[in-house]
Length: 382
Image 1 (tube, rainbow, N blue to C red):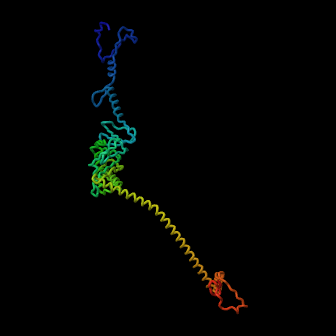
Image 2: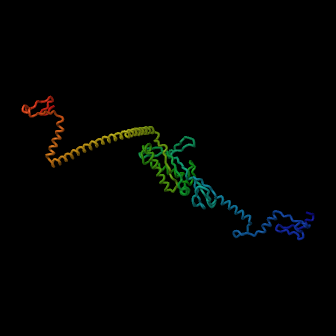
Image 3: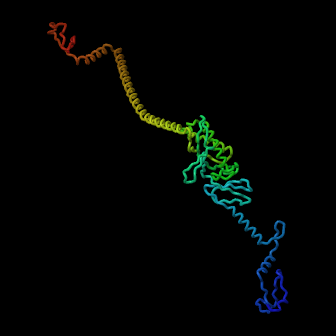
């Protein structure tokens, strides 16, 4: 500007420049055009917006309101979350349980209004009781005597190790019904029942079941029943706690007698295994011989039944024939007697030697005929 510009009064930020009336729109006049800054434009924009009332206080600008809306949208969008197929989400509103969400894309109020806990519920989890296995890939096993040593029903001491497999069945109960200090060995956080609570329940149930049986049951054929009874006992206790857990199986790993008598118990186990082997051989022999004996017995019975039926039928036929003969004899005695005589002669005469004596020589024949060479007597020949 010219040197005399100090005489021109400086305009305030809220004043608006009015061009001279004779200047025209082509800047043909001699009056200079005012230079408008960014601050002047913002001031003019704010001056043209009426004040907004908020919470009964003073006015706030539109920019602040837009900022609040954007922040609210971002806050609400942070409530979108994804649940995998093997997971469930527990939803809380102001710290209180509200509902559960299944797999897929979900939305829930973000913190601090709402909270969500996403937990794998289909995963089969394990608990080692009485021993601790080494790191992954390591075959080392450490005995935990305070958990493993138990007394059987016949007052013997055994070391029992077991693996418990379980799964979450009720997410709400699992997260909020049981307060638990946790289990650092398995990485179970506090407040969840599969920490120290589950370990105590497993130890109590197994001690109760083993204590009701003999040491032979624990070492040999009673292992399967001990496993099932322990599982049922654990499930009953956990249900009374509303723990939200389902026990899948209890697997006994090692059941050993004390070190001092272990050799004697191993001999007993070997003898029992030999007993089972011989019993299996006997069962196999029985399974082979019994069908053979049953078949032979059935054959003899069938033959006897056939002989019996034949004899009965023959006797019945002879009896029926005699009855018919008797009826004929009663109806015509002379004819029947003559027929019987002729039939008898037909059976007798063909097998005898016959002598025919005519009247011409009948007077010279002695009443007593000589015996034949066969020694037979009578009129018949040999």
